[in-house]
Length: 109
Image (cartoon, rainbow, N blue to C red; front, top):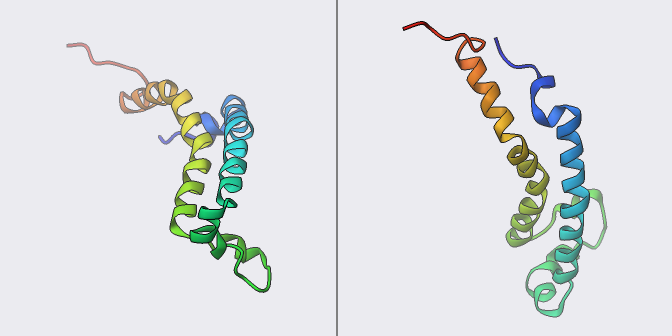
C-alpha cells in the first residue's frame, strides 16, 4: 500500500550517490567559503563574534550563532537534499502516479 524506503530515490544507490556528490562538490566548498567570509572584519564584528564568544568550548557551542548564520547554513545543507529531489522528481512523480492509480491499472470507459 505504501512505498518502502528502498523505492525512494534518496535511499537507493543513485540517490545516495547524487546526494554525496552534491554535498562534496557544492555544500562543503560553499560552507567553507561562507565561513571564511564571516571571519572578515564587518561580518565577524556584527554577526560571527557570537559564535566565538563562549569562554568554554563544547560541542553545543557550535550552534551558538546568529539568525543570519543559521539561515545561511540551512541553505547550504539544503543543496544536496533539494538537488537529489530535483534529480529524482520525475521518478517520484511516476511512482506517485502508479500508487494513486492502483498499480497503473486504468478503468475502461
